[in-house]
Image (cartoon, rainbow, N blue to C red):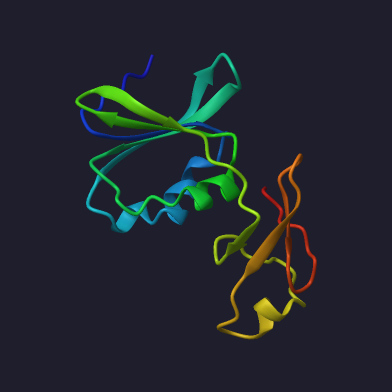
Length: 142
């Protein structure tokens, strides 16, 4: 069994849908942050069968929970200090997100006009469906 060490100070993003860790890594721009990051893919999970996990050693002052809620609102975020979880967060689905999700419709104005913000509105909270405010295209989470 794979064993990744305990964090003394940092953040654990857990219960990520399999394959979603790299999207979250990219959206949080972790490559350009001065923190150590461990990505665990296809970890066994009693709750989900399999899951991804991201462990971030250090502090991230600009962690945007709206981004995480829009990407995967089922994840959990553990804030760790002195090796102990001091706070558990469950991101929610924001009503509107800008420049987090990208419209894939090739005829959408966001695809043909540079500089236009990609804006999505939550249209189905139960299923986590976002639609582009310009063309109504649903965001595909695959």
